[in-house]
Image (cartoon, rainbow, N blue to C red; front, side, top):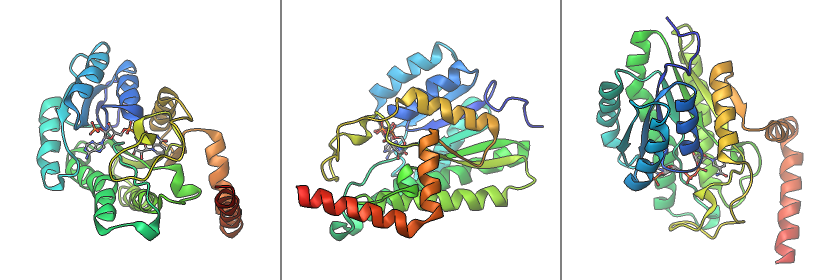
Length: 267
Ligand SMILES: NC(=O)c1ccc[n+]([C@@H]2O[C@H](COP(=O)([O-])OP(=O)(O)OC[C@H]3O[C@@H](n4cnc5c(N)ncnc54)[C@H](OP(=O)(O)O)[C@@H]3O)[C@@H](O)[C@H]2O)c1
């Protein structure tokens, strides 16, 4: 039977928990009564976040996992199930940017961003679903991006990976009807994290890190888990922008193109 509160008492797995939104989310979930498994590659950063998480949830554990290694995902997921006794809440939060115009995109760029942002979350969900289905309850939250609802200029492959994740999540949500298990899509906008810092394999950042604080984004995600909504945006203004694009995509794209032309002219 599903617990009255999907957060308090839950055994949660958060990917990308070494920084940014995932680190804030891991601490927030722990404060709200969940035991948390943290995944990421940087052991030192994971250890710092784990210390903060264990203040609230001492049984929480960190695992050094590279999601780019798709073949390893089922065994690594089983390791968490054994450590926590099961996973009730999976948040597929880890992600990488790919700041590169489509005109310069290489096959390696495309494959990397699709592996980490799309294939890894799907394979991880597939690995944890049998346990959730057997228990008759579970939540999978896939973290998308506002880019999939607004303008994808110079980040087309990144946005395509998130759009694929959203389409998958919708299909999963429908395939899970009546099982007690559900899938959700969470959409952050620009958030003050390391995501917008310079990094290898990417063009220069468009702007210094800015936007929402990770704690506020994490709080919105936890609220979504509790409400059970299929799709939630990190803030109301993001939902309004997405709605404006849905209402009239041609007009939205034309306005974006005009803005880009003005920017190019001003460069
Ligand atoms: N920041 C924004 O403006 C923004 C806007 C919209 C959507 N988002 C989405 O929000 C999510 C979190 O991003 P963030 O802003 O918190 O950025 P971040 O601080 O860079 O965090 C990304 C996390 O993903 C992990 N990660 C990246 N590649 C990985 C891999 N191969 N294996 C395992 N873990 C990996 C990183 O850990 P390690 O490097 O330690 O592995 C890190 O913990 C992403 O899905 C991103 O697309 C962010």
